[in-house]
Image (tube, rainbow, N blue to C red; front, top):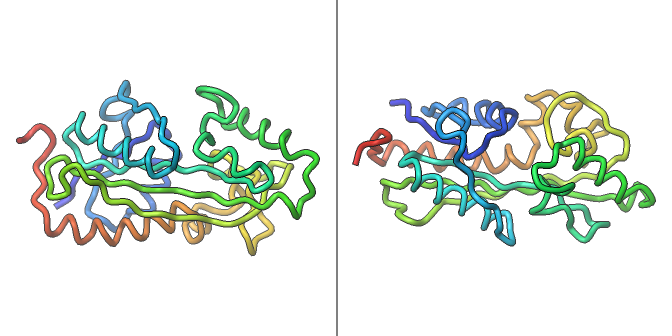
Length: 213
């Protein structure tokens, strides 16, 4: 039986990416835009895991649905790990990808290329308000090492992808096809692990439809 899995995001690019990553699971992914557009959670945690778990548990409680939340970002060694948990709002509240990338490039303008090492990190958190997990969420982690280049290249992806070159590659994440990206990205790593967990969880757990007790 296909179940609805609510992805705790308003980002259409992220929804498309997760739909590809979870294509073999018996789930229909929906975003907050489709379910409760006004619903949001203040991401005030000190870590990716804290933010992901908070989003998953609060949105699951508010909607009564199975929820998958993520928090991810770029850690740049030359910037002491910044933007980190502030990646989505690096240039300010509600900052665009373009604004965040401009600030990143400005901060690294005088840093030699070999010192612009960085990594994408992600934490996925799954919450089921009706299941045996109770108030506990299941989490998975992923990371992708690389470096930041100052010139933006590529039309795919989102966020810092036009400036991030994964280790072993000469193209940016935004120049990779979705299929290529889903073989190496931090989100793909965590999604593969979460997919294995969900495949077993969904076969063992009776899950009521939203609105049922």
